[in-house]
Length: 150
Image 1 (cartoon, rainbow, N blue to C red):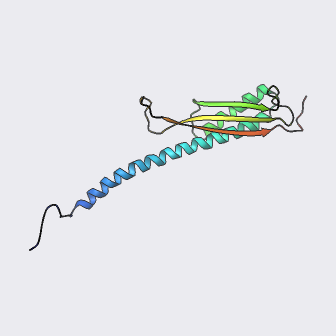
Image 2: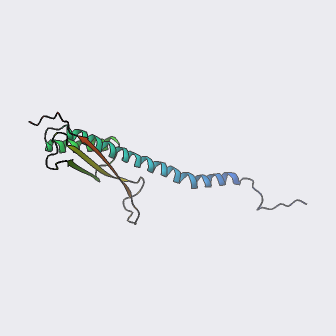
Image 3: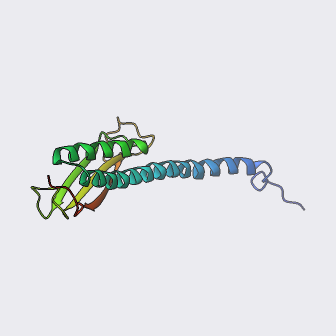
């Protein structure tokens, strides 16, 4: 005697299971890839911005020009990577003398902090979940010992 039941018959259910499992697994995976690429772009932007800002700072002729050039370098580096510069913090510190940033053999450190928003997150969400990832990078350059002091 052959046992036949609707519950043990598997014909036609593979396609439904594949689509269901595919959606359940594929949608989060695609979002994860998009989010990680956005975060990676922000990390590369922050690191490149800090490095380039430190380089242009030590090559300037005055501290005012150096700060302006560093700000432009940060904005340019962030734009290169498609990162919004609205939530960016740039901190410049000098050693050994904080008063004279461009003295010979002085060290200039530029720290850049960038808040990268998570993709596909509407700004109207007010829950206790973070809607952005803060990335920080720092770079230090030495002022040339041959710098003209005049």
